Amino acid sequence: MRSSTVAIILGASEWPKSQSRWASSAAFRSSATAFRNYLMAPDGLGLGEADVLDLFDDRRSAADLDDEIDQFLSRRRLDDRLKDVILYFTGHGAFAEDRRYVLATRATRVDALGQSGYRVASLARTINRSVRDGRKFVILDACFAGAAEQDFIVQSDVATHLEDQAMSALAESGTALLCATSSADVALAPSAGTYTMFSGALMKALRDGSPHPVRYLSFDDLRQLIANLIEKQYRDEAVMPEIHVPDQRRGDISRVALFPNPQFELAPPPAEPVREDVKRGPFPFRGRSVSLSTVRWLTAAGLLALFALLGAVAWRMDKGHSAVGAGKNAPASQASGADTQATPASSPAIISSGAAPQGPSEPATTDAARKARLEAAQREAECARIFQRLSLGETQPELLKRAQKLKCRD
Image 1 (cartoon, rainbow, N blue to C red):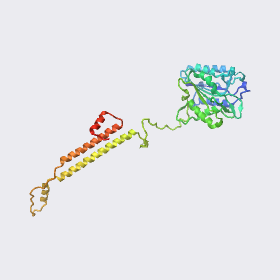
Image 2: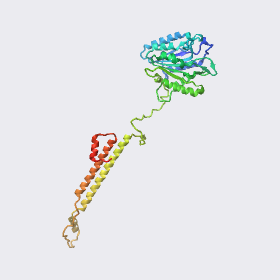
Image 3: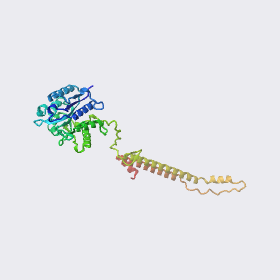
């Protein structure tokens, strides 16, 4: 099954017709080969042979290359699954006699750049015509001059001229350009290195990935990773990459996740997100902080339990007082009878002229006091429930009226 992504590789490592200006460089070929391998690797984009059009070091003219790209995209355009087009170029860039920016192919002649160079505007028109609704991801690692300056080969200042020419042509649909240079600098490539400065950092970023817990990387992610790698390795000689998004009517596709992040499977699972509606506070509960509403509920429950306990104690105290009062008010005849039975028969009988005076009767008074205390405890418990509901934000008129009726005290 064909992929929804296709890729095109352009550039050259030799320019037989322009040797006086551009010396051959194995760094360009190594960069193009490494990127092609990544496109087809199972742990890369996993594209098939039919999904990749490799035109690097092709000997044909710029016009023939343009026709080849048009036919390739036209065939894939019939596939409804086609969604993304990736264009990668590495090599020299130059300016034609009319100051139009061109990409140098193997057949480019330095004395006739306008006729033999591959104009960026022509490339953009071909891509837009063939893939109107697709997303185009363009990677440009282009050089400007072939003269070596010590250990470096000077490359072209891509961004400045792409802003004026290529970007306007590529703006028909979603397009993002990842350039090897900013508008103020020239790109550099170590002449003795395996890759160019930009492509070397690009391949390392794709191979090593990002420590951030994301499954796929975007152009914007790659730019940041590349910039960090270049700055760390080249320091004062570092040239920062730049992103251009000429068409954002359908969103900024430089932030579209496209390239697999090798570190995603190795990353630890993300921490449990904190709910925004929960206010964290210094209330530890099983190793976690609990919300303020939970503390309120626990406080209210504790108050209710306390009032219930106080009510039970009061009830037991009232019951004890009642038992003591009943014992004190026992009839004196019972006591006298017991004493008479305990008196020996030989002893003279003692006849009381009357029972000893009994204390006042208290059962009615004790029951009333116990009932009053129970009612007070119930009232306090109900007031606590009302205050708890009010603290949680409830403001029903019935609650307020009930609190006034019970004469609750805050």
